Length: 164
Figure (tube, rainbow, N blue to C red):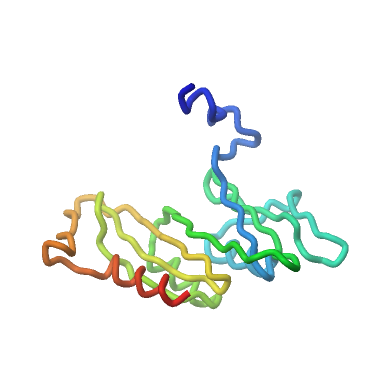
């Protein structure tokens, strides 16, 4: 049975969503939702918000493009499950500036990357690491670090992950 026989065809996913969607479990899910909404200029899917009697969120979500980022509060005994998320944006530096204004830290500044893209990374206050990509048509691919090129892309990630 091939993957096309197992995965629901994209056109059949309810509400026009993606076949795979991340689910993040953090402390202060409502704060995480505000962060994502403010930084990426999206709105929470209001009808999906499901608070428990104590006010903690068992479910909330925001749509970025065709992908729903789902969020819940960590309950007693549950580990936090922040994520590693890739997002295509129009301007990596602008997203990093907006994120820093909401408590995030830039991990990798806007850096030339392969496939004529710019890559930047940020770490939000919930320890979710965001890979930000924007198109950079016409720019040549950088020289790989192992051939004497810039090491920023790997070294900043390595430092950030070792520090978590």
